[in-house]
Picture (tube, rainbow, N blue to C red):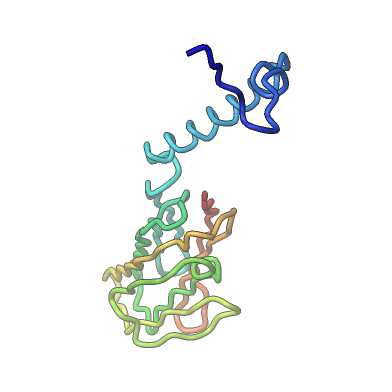
Amino acid sequence: MGDTVRPPDCIELGAHRDDPRRIERGFRWLVVTALTAFVVLGLANVFGQTPSETRATGSGATLAVSAPDDLRGGLFFQGRFEVVGERDLVQPTLVLSPDWFDGIHVNTIEPEPTGTTPENGGVGLEYDRLPAGEVLTVYLELQVNPTTLGRRAQWVELRDGDRPLARIERPVTIFP
């Protein structure tokens, strides 16, 4: 019964367990605490999903965009675009910047556009005639790719054919 437990080979208790340099131990606890706080804040939904709305009024129409400003990798979210024509819009077109699509997967677009056009890496969504006073609401259901992160400039432009009417620029931050 007098046997003592010896540490494994290559382990010296004075250097590994009883190290007087407590700064290193304190730093490790600080890193673990910071990571734990980050996870708890993510679970409390501090990093995404709360939509914000931005409006812009141009010549003959109003454009409103509602979408989250902060996102997380893997997050499903919705972008809502509302167009109100103050006059008849012959071919209302929503032009979305490339940052709406780069590292973000589009699941659905409702209502379906009558046509799409490439716009310098972005996409133009063309719709049928919008009479004055009518409202066109377009929903995009999106998902952030899990490896995507960083700050982006998502802009949306409302056009009547080729003529720009209103533009909204909004920064978006994607957290890991």
